[in-house]
Length: 86
Image (cartoon, rainbow, N blue to C red; front, side, top):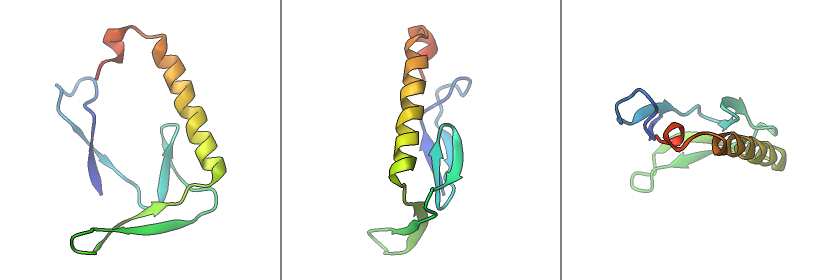
Protein backbone atom coordinates (compact mmCIF):
# COMPACT_ATOMS: atom_id res chain seq x y z
CA UNK A 1 0.00 0.00 0.00
CA UNK A 2 1.41 3.40 -0.90
CA UNK A 3 0.50 6.55 0.96
CA UNK A 4 1.58 10.11 0.49
CA UNK A 5 4.17 11.49 2.89
CA UNK A 6 5.14 15.11 3.46
CA UNK A 7 7.50 16.40 0.77
CA UNK A 8 11.17 15.69 1.40
CA UNK A 9 14.12 17.91 0.56
CA UNK A 10 14.97 17.80 -3.13
CA UNK A 11 11.50 16.79 -4.35
CA UNK A 12 10.44 20.30 -5.37
CA UNK A 13 7.63 20.26 -2.83
CA UNK A 14 5.93 17.23 -4.36
CA UNK A 15 4.63 14.50 -2.03
CA UNK A 16 6.69 11.32 -1.93
CA UNK A 17 4.91 7.93 -2.04
CA UNK A 18 5.82 5.67 0.88
CA UNK A 19 5.47 1.90 0.86
CA UNK A 20 3.79 0.70 4.06
CA UNK A 21 4.98 -2.78 4.98
CA UNK A 22 1.97 -4.96 5.88
CA UNK A 23 2.11 -6.20 9.47
CA UNK A 24 5.13 -4.10 10.43
CA UNK A 25 5.85 -1.00 12.50
CA UNK A 26 7.99 1.95 11.40
CA UNK A 27 10.16 2.84 14.40
CA UNK A 28 13.37 4.87 14.38
CA UNK A 29 13.50 4.99 10.59
CA UNK A 30 13.15 1.24 10.07
CA UNK A 31 10.36 -1.22 9.31
CA UNK A 32 10.23 -4.08 11.80
CA UNK A 33 7.87 -6.71 13.14
CA UNK A 34 5.94 -5.92 16.29
CA UNK A 35 7.49 -7.41 19.41
CA UNK A 36 4.61 -9.82 19.98
CA UNK A 37 4.25 -10.60 16.28
CA UNK A 38 0.55 -9.77 16.40
CA UNK A 39 -1.28 -8.05 13.56
CA UNK A 40 -4.81 -7.26 12.45
CA UNK A 41 -6.48 -6.68 9.10
CA UNK A 42 -7.89 -3.26 8.24
CA UNK A 43 -10.80 -2.91 5.84
CA UNK A 44 -12.30 -0.24 3.65
CA UNK A 45 -15.39 1.16 5.39
CA UNK A 46 -17.05 1.47 1.99
CA UNK A 47 -16.39 -1.94 0.45
CA UNK A 48 -15.35 -3.91 3.56
CA UNK A 49 -12.46 -5.21 1.44
CA UNK A 50 -9.28 -5.89 3.43
CA UNK A 51 -6.79 -3.13 2.52
CA UNK A 52 -3.73 -4.25 4.46
CA UNK A 53 -2.56 -5.83 7.69
CA UNK A 54 -1.49 -3.57 10.54
CA UNK A 55 0.96 -4.59 13.26
CA UNK A 56 -0.31 -4.48 16.83
CA UNK A 57 2.27 -2.60 18.88
CA UNK A 58 3.17 -3.84 22.34
CA UNK A 59 3.93 -1.49 25.25
CA UNK A 60 7.65 -2.04 24.52
CA UNK A 61 7.15 -1.11 20.84
CA UNK A 62 5.33 2.05 21.89
CA UNK A 63 8.08 2.98 24.35
CA UNK A 64 10.74 2.50 21.65
CA UNK A 65 8.73 4.65 19.21
CA UNK A 66 8.35 7.42 21.79
CA UNK A 67 12.07 7.30 22.63
CA UNK A 68 12.95 7.50 18.91
CA UNK A 69 10.56 10.42 18.38
CA UNK A 70 11.97 12.29 21.38
CA UNK A 71 15.54 11.76 20.12
CA UNK A 72 14.56 13.02 16.66
CA UNK A 73 12.78 16.06 18.10
CA UNK A 74 15.79 16.89 20.25
CA UNK A 75 18.09 16.64 17.24
CA UNK A 76 15.72 18.72 15.09
CA UNK A 77 15.48 21.46 17.71
CA UNK A 78 19.22 22.09 17.29
CA UNK A 79 18.82 22.72 13.52
CA UNK A 80 18.13 26.06 11.90
CA UNK A 81 14.54 26.74 10.83
CA UNK A 82 15.51 26.51 7.15
CA UNK A 83 16.87 23.00 7.74
CA UNK A 84 13.67 22.00 9.54
CA UNK A 85 11.32 23.01 6.74
CA UNK A 86 9.76 20.38 4.49
